[in-house]
Length: 134
Ligand SMILES: Cc1cc2nc3c(=O)[nH]c(=O)nc-3n(C[C@H](O)[C@H](O)[C@H](O)COP(=O)(O)O)c2cc1C
Image (cartoon, rainbow, N blue to C red):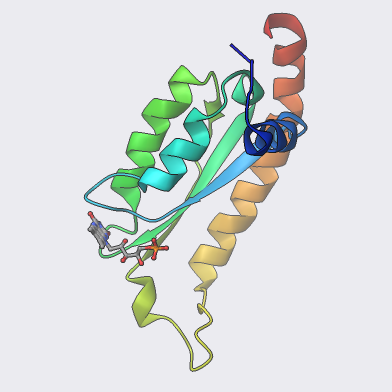
């Protein structure tokens, strides 16, 4: 209902409210998203509406793909347009260098570039949707 009591909620609402699109970064826990991410999403509603989103996920063999599928269901309720394009990072722990930095494959870099191109495009498009429907 947009009646926020807590200072942290007001700060979070202001931050999300001024953005046009999102890239959610998520791990996978028992085939779904971490509870902390779900809580952060659930604190707000209108601030998410009629915006665009994509995903970067990491985990074991599936690269967090099942978490993203759950997140897509949440996006529908938030009136967020979720892009088909996403970045999956399977078994990320096998791809860390000595400094603990993740070593991206060419395919992952290409997927990330596509996500960035598309999220910019669709975030712009969703401004029109917000003006008309929001
Ligand atoms: C309770 C628990 C459940 C997990 N379930 C999954 C899972 O279903 N699929 C998967 O790919 N990884 C799973 N993992 C591995 C996590 O994705 C991995 O530990 C990841 O590093 C967690 O990210 P975080 O440390 O940024 O929270 C699980 C880990 C824990 C502790």
